[in-house]
Length: 398
Ligand code: NIG
Ligand code: FE
Image (cartoon, rainbow, N blue to C red; front, side, top):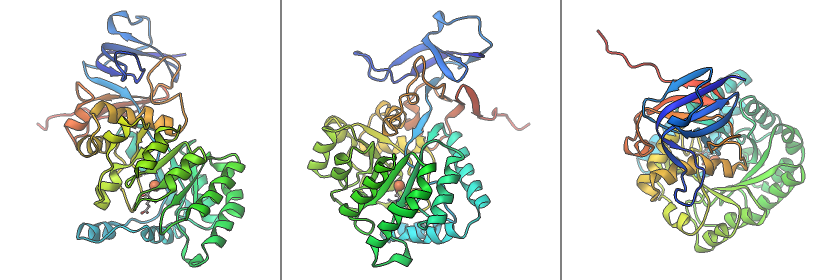
């Protein structure tokens, strides 16, 4: 098995919790990769010397690869005009999803494949090494099946979101649409998916409808996750906790009861700062959530409507600036938090046995991710022990 030693790391964030440092920070550190796994971490001076390749980190920071636990990468078209209108004062509404459904139904497999791969590569270049991808812009049996199948070509973390909104051909017949989702559509999609999701919100699905979707998915061996409290307060968060969802996502409008229920549960709250940013909604108070004992994750929610960013560094910067997280907390939420939201213990942490998914920053500390917003600070990315992306050497034009 080939070995790579990354040495001279100025600041290594491992996320291995210890009594004196919950972020597992090492200075002047090294990481040994063996095959696709981490074999060792420690002080540069103690590192093994007989290795196949040595990478000098130049005193820069290394963090775990980002685990983006919420995205909608398979879609046709875009909604730049809707965004422009919103910035001129229009309100975001769940109904916009239907325009993407029309564009997605009209797109070929190859067009959708190019879109999902392009966005996946864009993510990789920004340090994301694990991504969850949802369906939800097909909303008929054949198109939903195509979306989960195309998503499964690029990730193991595929989510069936047939219950995204009620499609136009079922307007005023939401319960009949739910019957389709939990019947023929689930039959077609379950073989390609690991997760079942539902948008439990006014304008999408009610709590009883959402419960039917989640229970049917669970009965088929899928694990539940929920979109809730994005557009206003509701009972979706408590439904998610009740069904044992791995994660409930958005939480823009949380009540005290929601926070108490989350704190007492194993359900992760996945915050999506790109959504509040591009829908001009208020940011949830992450400080309050963390202090209450809620496990939080950060994700991009990349989609053409509410959040068309694929950048975890951008989401980290916003979470620090506008949600009250410290930079270290935001990075943990974007790595170990995302792993918890996907119930994965092999990613999000740099420790012997975990996947060798690492990001070398073009900066001396992790704080720079929030301190230098908008600057491309990802220098090199390893996924499964292999260099998956590398920043071009900067040169001076003669
Ligand atoms: O996570 N909340 C529902 N779904 C997406 C929005 C999709 C869209 O506007 O196209 C979300 O924000
Ligand atoms: Fe979403």
